[in-house]
Length: 184
Image (spheres, rainbow, N blue to C red):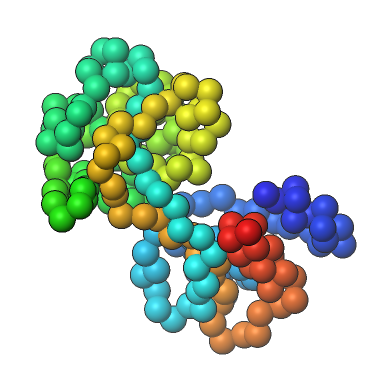
């Protein structure tokens, strides 16, 4: 979406910092950040711009080798690629009034979303990810969702602004663009 935003605002220059850690916005001189998940720091000014469904995903080659789970409890027999910034190795599922938490085996824990993508695409195991994270691979069939009759807690995308200083016009334009893009 960044090229679209930049086309609409040709006078702006962007510096994109791609980091899964929680960066201190004021200290780093950042005008606006996009953060996924639960908002841990209540001192920040945050606006939810999107909510995304999450899925259990793996490659056909992984499923050919390890089998395809048909229930959440079968996940304990599978290898998981765990995103350390996410839910960890306990995955929570819901179907109608049934809630179920499953501990997954993980020989591979990763701190960056790009690492999760690379590991899953290398057939290392299953993961929980947002619909967005593997959307091209889901369309092409390179990655498949399983357990689609169960739901996982959704993932929120937040636009976060430093507290204590007025949001710049460019930061407000950036947040408004993402809000409109996701909620159109």
